[in-house]
Image (cartoon, rainbow, N blue to C red; front, side):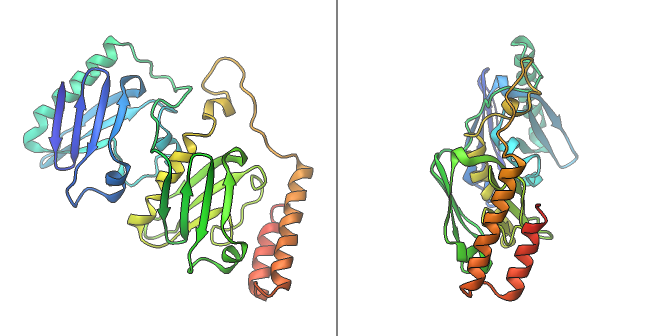
Length: 293
C-alpha cells in the first residue's frame, strides 16, 4: 500500500485502485468535498506526475480520454483547485509523493495499461439521486429524468414555462461551463428538439444560467456528470475510439427542426398574448428562435 496523507486530501494505492479522499480542511473546495471519495481503477490511469516546488508541490493523476464522466462533462474546465485529480503536497512530504507516483508508474508498466482512449466509462460518477440549487434554480436527476425548478430570480420566460422535466432518453448531451466570477456559466441540456436551436442561457428553458455564487454554482457539475455517465459513451457517437463503425447520433431532420422552431414560436406567442411576456422580452426571445432557421 502506497499512501500519502495531506491537508488537501489522501491518496492511497493498493496495486489496482487509486483511492482519492478529499480533505476536510476549510481550504478544500466545496465541490471536492461534495463529490466525495473517488476510486480510480488502474486501467483508467494514463500516467502520474509529481511536481515539486520550493514551498509546496503537487501530484497530478492523468486519466485516459473517455474513462471518466466527470472529465467528459466538464471538458477540462474545472477550476484548478476543484480538480480532484490534483493533490497539494507539503515540501517535507515530497519523498512520499514521489514514492506513490513511482508505485503507480510501476503498476502501469507491469499491467501494460494502454494509453489509448477508453471505449466505456471506467468510473461511475456521482450516485443518484442528486440535486443542486444554483443561482438560476434547482436541478435534480434521479437516474431517469432531469427536473429544473426555476428560482424567483430566474428570467420571466423561464418561470412562465414552469418546471422543466426532461427524460434521459430525450437527451443528446450535456453542456457545462463554470461561472468564473467574471463571466457567467451555464448548464445546458441538449435534447433532440433543441439540438439545432439554442437560446441565450438566461432565456432557454433547457438551460441553467450560472451567475451567482461561483462556489455553489460549481456543484451543478455533479448533475452534469451524473447525467453524462448514463448517456451513451462518446465512442458510440463519434466512432473515434473503436475500429468498427459506430452508429451516428440520432439528430432530427431539417424539416423536423423547422417544426420544432415553429412550435417554440407558437408557445412564445401564447405567452405574449397571455401577458406573461413584455414586448421587449417577446421580441428578444423571438429573434433568438428565428436565428435557428
